[in-house]
Image (tube, rainbow, N blue to C red; front, side, top):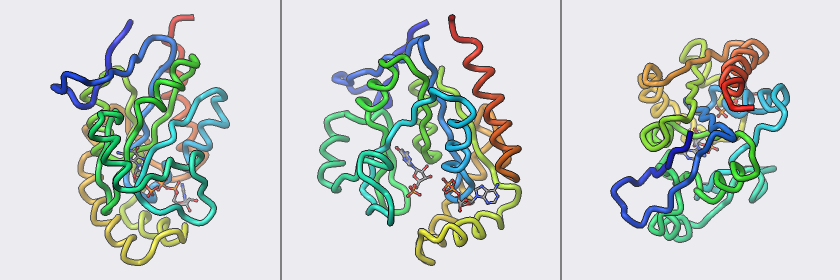
Length: 209
Ligand code: ADP
Ligand code: 5GP
């Protein structure tokens, strides 16, 4: 099976990303602080060989974050230039900053024959779903809305204002969860990671040998 993924359909010059049967694309989405990063780390320990796509962003690096490992940190000008050149499979504005998945990043990882995990917010996940129906989308939900604040405060990486803005966005994101193929409630990391692992392994089992 072969398919062409292009988030910006209608743009004739779109450079498509080839998603073929060699690997799968897993999209992990959900509100900030729900535990996407934590569960992806646990998933990659449980399912060796899953590649993580490194996104581009215009937000400033947090303490300990490294360019090229955690994100490709771009200036606004660089980001918009790449967006204008159709270099993103999807991109979105979130809390005043730009975030996007570079086609080159995904292509390189798929070309190596592996399956790839994207960690992105809901607007981007919708774009991937529209452009790449064979991608597997998983929404990570909190056990209750109050736990998002507790987790964001506990993580200690965002200002009080940034947390408030992320929680406002989270209300819209939580309302969108039924759009997604799979929903995993992150009540306990081990339980949620096991649920995510089951989804991923079931999909990988369907790949041609
Ligand atoms: P996201 O990537 O979705 O923004 P993180 O993975 O950074 O979220 O998790 C946010 C915070 O919540 C982190 O401090 C993390 O350790 C914590 N966390 C993640 N999952 C759980 C859980 N099931 N129970 C309690 N705390 C959690
Ligand atoms: P953070 O600033 O906490 O790293 O990320 C903020 C939000 O942007 C999170 O929900 C994260 O999943 C999302 N995000 C990270 N990379 C991308 C991306 O490439 N595209 C989109 N659409 N969202 C992303």
